Structures are given as structure tokens and as C-alpha cells.
Amino acid sequence: MDHPFRSAAVGGFNRQDVLDYLEKTAAENAQKQQELEKQLEQQKQELEQLRRRSGELEEREAIFSRERESMSRELEQTKGVLQDIRQREKAQSEELTQLRQERDRLRARVAALEPDAAAYAAVKDRTAGMELQAHCRAHAVQEQADQQARQVRRQTEQWLRQVQQEYEQLRSQVESTVSHAADELSKAGRCLDQLNQMLGEQEVALEAVSQEYLDSDPEKVPAPVPLEEA
Image (cartoon, rainbow, N blue to C red; front, side, top):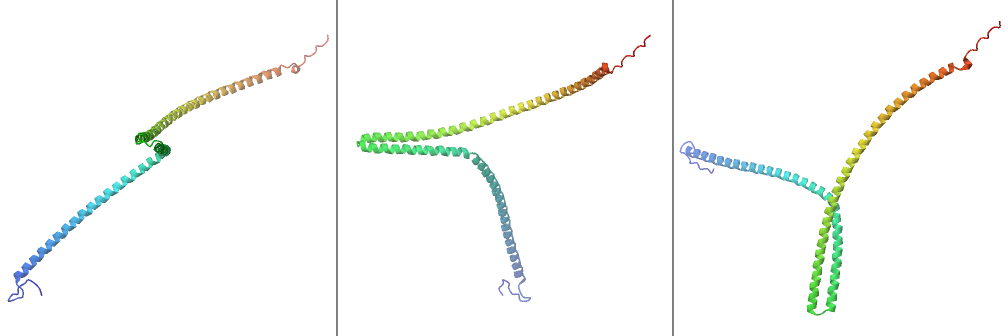
């Protein structure tokens, strides 16, 4: 058996060797335990960092999701404007293509009619100027399109505000008219009640007059009694 113990003359191993071995083993175990506890603490800290990092990532994901939804709504709102801009860009591209074709024709004509290098260089400069002018014109058209889009947006907003104001005024007028009509109807109802009462009173009076007239009819008055001759 492999051990650091010395044999004693009586009783087996040397006692001091055994005690030293036990202390050494206990110290090694304590050191290993400290190392394990340190590793466990590091792992706990790493786990806590990972949890915080996961929470931060979830929060950032929620923020990105809200921003994406907001951007999607803005994108839907600007689709109409983008469609107009795309149409204008298409028209500008077609115009630019025509200008380039015209430039190519001019270059071909210059090459065929004026072989002189100096004249060709001058015409080439002119062609370059035309290309620059076309580019500037395209940029100006783009800027004009943007200005028109902004102007249309402002006009639309003004029109909406005006319609809202007119609607509020119309609603106020309608409410006032309805209130006035209700007052007039109430007045007419009171007048009609008074008229009915008056007609009722006149009908009673007419019946009384008719009865007096019937009572005073000569045909209903008894004839006088003839006198006796003397």
C-alpha cells in the first residue's frame, strides 16, 4: 500500500505521520472547496449578467418592434406621395433618355461633318454642357416635384381645416334653425289651441242664437183668440 506513513516499532504507523497526512488532506480539501465555491460564485455572476443581458435584449427587441410598427404606419401614409414621385422620376428618366439620344445624334453628326479636332473639341464641350444642363434640368424638375408635393400636402391640410370649419358652422346653423323651428311650432300650436277654443265659443253662441231664432219663428207663435160679437 502506497502511503507516506513510517512504520512504528509498536502499533503500526507513526502517529505524527498520520496527523500530518490528515492535516495535509484537510488543507487540500479546504482549498479545493474554496476553488469550487469561487467557481460557483463566478458562474452565478455570469448567470446574473446573462439574465440582465437577456432582459436588455428583450427590451431592445420590444423597442425595435414598436419602432418598426411606427415606421410601417409612416410608410403606409407616404405610399401615395412615393407613387407620385416614382411617376415623376419615370417621366424624368424618359426625358433624360431622350436628351442622351439627342446628345448621341449630335456627337455622330459632329464626327461626320467636322473632322477638325479643334472644332470637334468645341462641339464636344458643347455636348458636355448640354449633358450638364440636362442633369441640372432633371435636378430642377425633381426639386419642383418635391415642392409641388409639399404644396399639395399643405393645400390638402388647409382644405381639410376649411371643410371642418364649414362643417362646424353648418352644424351650428342647423342647430339654430331646428331650435327656431321648434319655437315656431310651439307658438303655432298655442295659436291653434286658442283658435279651437274661440271656434268652440263661437259655436256655442251660434247655437244659442239659432235656438232664439227658432223660438221666435212666426209659424210657431199661437194665433190670437177671436173676439165674440156683441
